[in-house]
Figure 1 (cartoon, one colour):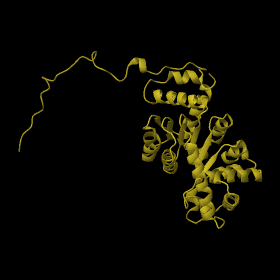
Figure 2 (cartoon, helix red, strand yellow):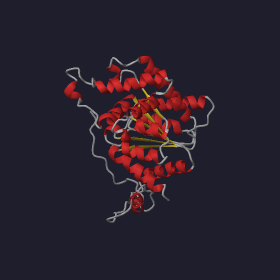
Figure 3 (tube, rainbow, N blue to C red):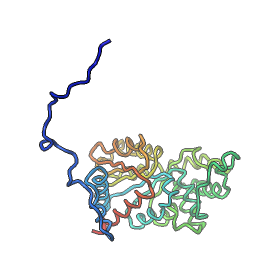
Figure 4 (cartoon, rainbow, N blue to C red):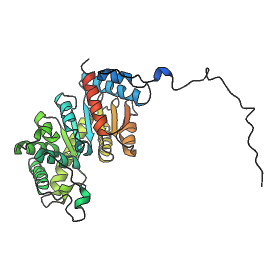
Length: 315
């Protein structure tokens, strides 16, 4: 067997660090903030590295889209609702900054419970063993009644839910995305995967009505994506369903001859996912737009984005 000796480094070729390109300099460093600093000063104090570059750039692109009267669409998972961000999103809706919202089926469950009773999100481990998970009577009845009535009227699922909540005059409609969207006449679409949501377990669920109203919303979502040139699509916390829906809608829009090439996308989530990177950040923007991936807790990152965007639009 060959015997090895430690390699002699004495002949190693070196160069001067003064002549080498370096990715980080002291000019890139962050700056400490003085007490009482403004949000704008905080943004300007960030290190000129990674998200310290991307976050302000994203805020600027979103503000330009809004100033140019271009859409800012939001697709989101239900966790965003569960961590208490409805008031933040509603403020952006009322300011005309968010022009549409797309939810998955879980989103309407949690939003409806918030509207009805001001609380949501059961402890699954406490009720799963007994088969009681998802069996809340009022939740199933209200959501399915809204969908069934909407189908009979030829409405989309999101609009049907919002109209039903407003008609019932629930005590917390003011913090409901569904009710607010209907009140403001902002398109809110719902994209359902049958069997994923607790309301599908209830006897009042009508598969035909769910399919009809959700497919109506998919076609409406496609129409909005077809008008996305110069605008932005933000994915908040949906790891699979909304990224897939968005990519299919973009395909439909381009197939039908709509120009949707130069726009901004951003994914906000607390871990990295394959579909969000490929279907939201990378693939859709290959024709001239730009995508961003921001990792962090929703309850911190989304309020920061909202505050920074509102602040930027004051200039």
